[in-house]
Image (cartoon, rainbow, N blue to C red; front, side):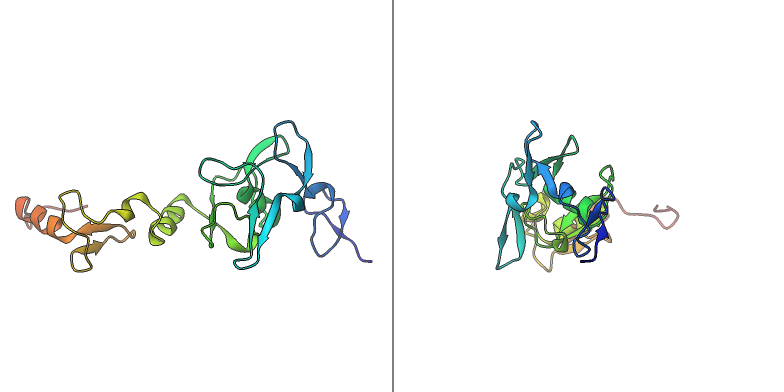
Length: 174
């Protein structure tokens, strides 16, 4: 049988997975009791999500202890399979929008702005659930404008703002 090299520790391993058995063990408790990773998830056959069975955060993300660090399961997955460093400040986003899922095929790495755009485009941002602007005008397709960053604004309020504060031709708008 051919052997590969573990991408984590450099030990020999199965070339199909590129992880040795030792690196497949993680802890879901601060005590450091090691549990095989395979015992920490259930496969959702309909969505192919790997749903975390261990501890969860208050927002529903899986939590593990890995190399003496508390880490969310999807960040651990990005580290193990997508080669993202543990101390990377970028976000790990879900294509499937399931916080318990840590299937690397459902994850992608992005910036905080990309995370917010992804969130609002899928209707999960708190402001995107509002049906009216702060002045009470309904967010209808005819009354809703979009900013270049993907945000929305009330066209009635924008028109009223321009009537109250007209811009002269000599003013420079940044």
